[in-house]
Image (cartoon, rainbow, N blue to C red; front, side, top):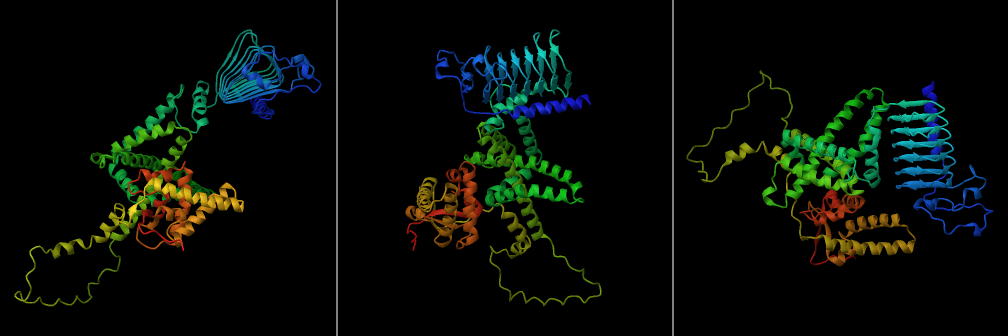
Length: 555
């Protein structure tokens, strides 16, 4: 019962801390009765004092309990100097230090709380340490952090440390209970997690070069070693999946997106059906193993794209490609925002490559499987005898270089060879030279200006202008094979199979443009580095942009 009451008290404290009025921007609150002349222009203010009143505590509505000024800091520390009086102090991704008088609470989230003055209610630290060497009216709580009480500490309520340690000076006074709750064992006050949140999560990246993140780099290099081991153990499987991505990038990306969207639906269906619920752990484990192998494949593909710059390293072993791709990925993980995008994109892409490789393997096995039929009966009549061959003198002598027997011997293996070669066949030739990056960007800019002008006349917002641009592109590609900007720059969109542009291909290319734009426009920039001069939406739709010498009329 005592632990239950303490947990309830902790929950109320956290809810109370979150309900404190917050203001990200600095404000100065003065009593309505205070004249403008009462201001003290010569008062020395600390950087955090911009959140507080410049008036004396005695002029702030009756001393203790009369202050209505809150200090709220995001991503930096909060400080209350000695002799100052505020209502509450809250720091998110920062520490709170109070040597003055606080009416309500001093709270730090992912930071330390240090109190050497007076606090009316509570001192709370979430994922941080709490040090108190003054008066606290109610409780002192540290969630996943340590609590230390100095010789002048006077705590009116309980002292609770969850997942940390408690150090108490013999002269410290605690009028309530002292309790230490071990959660997941003692983990050093979770300073490691605080450092990762402050330097990595807050900037949208999985890694950073900062103090306290040595464990994160150890984990990253450990997984890289695991991917290298996978490439050493099963190099053939990794190489086959990489060749699938190189030959069919668009379909591999579609398989990745389809798998990513259908995975939670599959788990939900298994959970809803009582019979399928026991299969959830097995499916989760299978996805985990597939994700590890897929990450190795994605790194190998990335590394091979870099090694392909040199012809001598184009056919490098998978383990070397994984090493190069892994080092490149570690560099990308440090970049803010792009780090998490690259991390998740490699995971999803790797699983999609494996799924599409399995589909191709299944199709090849179906193409080479022998026909299934009833066995011939022993009593059935034998087949009619073949006609006697013509005399040897009547048969024409074959040419010296003719080899009909070799062609006949290879004929049964033709379906299997075509199915296996479909994953590695080069892109077919199309009429016209492939358009480069800059000329395509000029054409896109002209189309964007045209559609923006039309959208401004109609009164469309920005997201509607982008939707209008996609519709405009799909219609123009289907009807004319190009747009207004493409006509000015002499460009045309053609299919790789040589067929006439149809509606499914045009719509798929238009929708793929959103994917190319979503990842910081990387899908459009891909044209500058791709050997086939294809963007991501070109690879998805199976198209390419070529330069036409004669031009294409719009009417």
